[in-house]
Image (cartoon, rainbow, N blue to C red; front, side, top):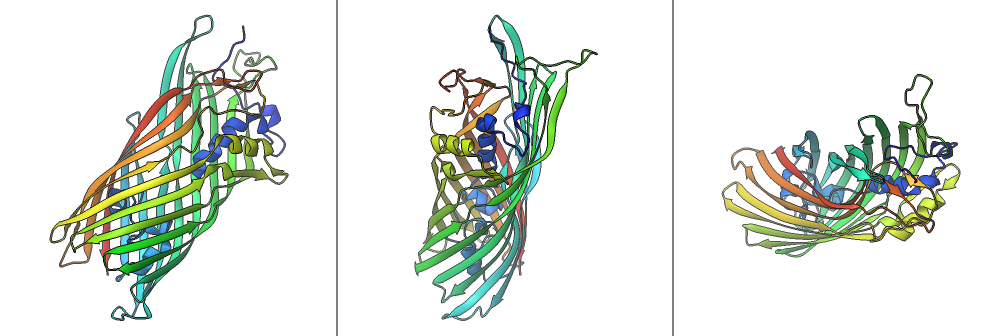
Length: 439
């Protein structure tokens, strides 16, 4: 009987030279997808509480991540700092900076025609958190018992430098250059003795362009474009060594032999993004935003100095697809200086059903996840002091990420997966606080 052990290696003999790991195209491509996806609602507490549906309104340090034209809406300089305390699906608590922004506003604020005002911004925006954990156990084959622990750690963020201007209070334009950083770690531990570890660090750049049009006092229309992010990825790995029969190797002291690699570099290009939005102002007390974002994850590209990873490209063309993200949010002024907010965001699945592996290999001997659709439920409140430049906002974000979780995987002679996934929803709670000053 063929035995499959979950905590296996990366088929390391095929990794060198130059990271030619198309044998492991499945998990290479899934790591590329993990690093390409971002959470659509993370940012300042106001932005998050409204479900991220603020592109048509602007005047918030997080709207520049998708549409820098929002900087043209500012009438005052702004300093903002946002902290996010979040709990993962296993109850672990983590803390990170969601946003930091410096916005310098200048120009003729009393003008009505032509150039009115503009803003230059330097900001940091958190794009995603990777913390999660899965513990599973059971038996397979002839009753072999196992327990397995799968952990992901890290996150992604972006430094933004952007400029936006206001023309006649009806046309707003913006452009930005962004530096993205990613820190990602993945670990599969089998029966508390076998470890498979991947460590990835990536950095790269993209640019954004955007516009907001105000055809009437009660409505804004936004359109934004974000280029692909061109990333350089450095990957390390550490795993048990296996022989040609897929059995773990031991040294003469009876200790498990481990191997791996360090500092393997390759290039990752994420898909471009197009987004649009509508913003409605109801009297002077309420605002309603609706945003839409499009990205096609089948356009992810991995390559090194020898060229594209062709098998990865084939896999992604076959199994990845375009996503559509809808964000909606509202803000209501309930008293002088006080506002309450609520929102919702929904992102379709970046992967197709019935994923198929066109490349033949024996086994994937560690855990992995296939992301599906995600939903975000958001709410919060804010206070802006009428007598001082101080303001404070609070938001709560509940993320529900559906996914297919594979403890391990084997492939039959036709390339079909033999093991069914565990279908589950990963829930994450975020508590977000922003403190700021408008000068």
